[in-house]
Image (cartoon, rainbow over all chains, first blue to last red; front, side):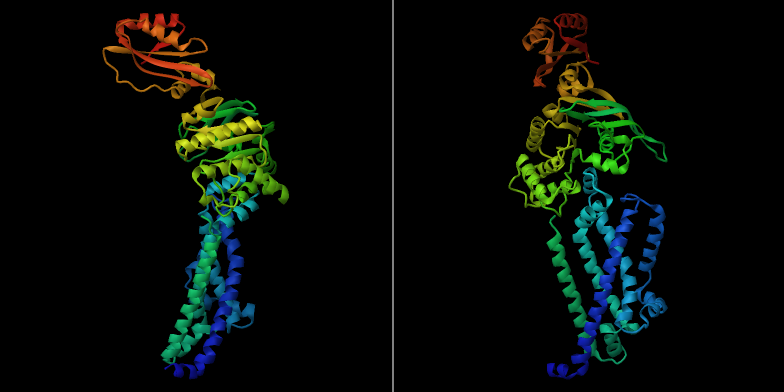
Length: 223
Length: 325
């Protein structure tokens, strides 16, 4: 049976290619999500009523946009964004194009996780830093972010894993990757073997992200 | 060193304004350990927040070490705060930083260069008796050790004032004594002015030179410890020299006698009580040494008809005596 698997060109060539595409898609989207989502999450916390700089005028609209991004099912968001994607990337096909809806879908998700992680930091620590004469920027970075870092890393791990799941849906509308392979062979051609292999690879990828994420979070956590 | 004048803080609320501080006047001398006591909700925490400038008074002024905290703009206030060290009930160390890095934090904020920081941190940890725990993380320390780190951190920038907000309320009694001993020792060595917010009278008895009692945002009683304890029948005197409750007999009366060795030695007080003769019995009493004074509070149980002559006889002997309601 193993010989049969290794002879199948779909499995020996298309699956590794698709895996690489998935990793590229997830990797770039994760990077963009971290760069945009982290400050966005901190902003959400900072302008909250008990935050460092309560600003109702900012909190309301930003919260609304974030919730909007969170409430749409990813597949619908991806389709709705097709014209935007085409305008930004020049095409709506391929893993590069998939990065646009993936990032836009994951940023609000991660931002809320960051907001929650930072909110869990004991206000007493913030007060202590303020009494020492810390500026707001110092409180934000050296107290809130640093103390919440283990939780932020855990949230980022969850986000990356969600991105792997979203990437399969992005594949369905032309993004490529393992999702595309699983749908075109497994669903449209009833090729169960390819389907199963794709599932196994996805499970392995998710597991790997989880293990690495947990290890990093543990290293950072001195509680 | 610290002067509060006409300090008021009102929190506006839909259901009516909440007056947290209602005209506080208070002076704390340089080098004193001053206790601020009161039940929860008396305004103690608001008072500290006004001292640190975390809260702006509604009216009145707060002056610390010559700076009018209540009038400083935000940027200058941050600088002024570095002249104050603060110790918290829950210590509030950063879990992500080692003990040494926690103590270094205020030095980083103050812009002290790295090498000088390391020297200062070593000095401070030595000062609080944790010279060998610099690389540990807060989670690895006991509650008492954590509070020592909190004190080292508060002293890092050589503040003129140390504010302690319920510093021992989360600690057991043996650790409490150690921490209070450290505070007094630091005051003696560094000449720092200390304000301790607490709801525990034991803390006041242990370390304070002077004390203020707050109730509903007002000062009820304030003064040097030896003065307030000798004000017989005053709330602080009663709280600092407690006598056990006694069940009262309908037919008899309770008379309370108080004295301080500054005016009457204990043997004279006891002799005066003994001279009242039969029918008068001591049912409860406390004799102790506080703020360098030997103090006594005795409760006498006697028949109704003997009250007036007993009060007169005790007062003749120089004792403070009064019928207890």
